[in-house]
Length: 322
Image (cartoon, rainbow, N blue to C red; front, top):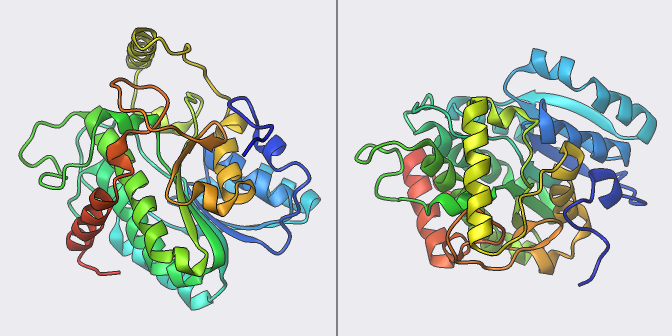
C-alpha cells in the first residue's frame, strides 16, 4: 500500500484530518519523550487517553502540554500509577482498570529502559527483560478483555532487537556475563515476539498487535543511563555498521517524528497490513538477516515458534497463565 508517510513524518502529519473522538487509548510511559508526544497528538485529535506512569507527581508536571492539547482538541487525559518493574504494581494497575470496566480501542506499550547497569526488578528479573517485556506482558494480558473488537496493541521495540535473540535458558543473566546492550536487544526482541503471539491469539476478534521501531532519538529519558562518550561510541559503531552494509547514513529523529510510526500503526495502517509485524518509518519493515544495527527486522523476532516459546516461558516466570 502506498502512502505519503516515511522516516521524516511527524505525529501530527500522520494523524492529519483524523477524528479520534470516541476512541480510548492506554499509553504506558506517558510522562516523558515519545510517550508525552504520543498522548498529545492523540488528545489533540479528540481521543480519550489514559497515561500509565511510575511517578504520578512527575507526570502531572510533565504532561501540562497534553492537557492543553486536550482542551483545544476535544480529547481528555488522565493518569494511573504503574511501575513495570514491580508485578504487584502492574497487577494493581490492571485490577483498577478492569474494575473501572471502560474498554480501550488501542493499547500502546511505550515505556522502557535502555542499557542500565546490571540490576533486578522487585521480582528478581533482570531489569530490562523484567521491565520492557514481563511488566507489559502481565499488564496487557490482564486487561486484554477490555480491548474492543477491532482494537490494536502497539509494542515499542527497537532496531536494538538486532543485538540478540531472547535467551529462554538464561533470561536473567544468571549463568552468562551481563552485557547491557545484549540485555536491551533481548528485551526488544521479546517486545516483537509478544506482539506476534498476541496477534495470533486475538486476531479472531479483529484485534491486531504490532511492534514498532520509533527511530534513533537521543532527546528522551531512554538514554539516561548513557554518558556522552558512550553515546558517541554507539553512534560511531552504528555508522560503521551501516557503511559496511552499504546502507544509508544514520538519521536522527525528533520526538514528533519518533511518535509517528506508533500512531501510524495504531490508527492509520490497515489492520491486515500490520498484524503480527514489525514497522519502522511508517511502513512494514523488511526481513533483514544481516548483522549490525540497521533497518529491517531479524527473522528470529518474527518466528512464530519462538514467540510461542517466549509466551510459555513468560507465564512460567510471572507465575500466571493467560
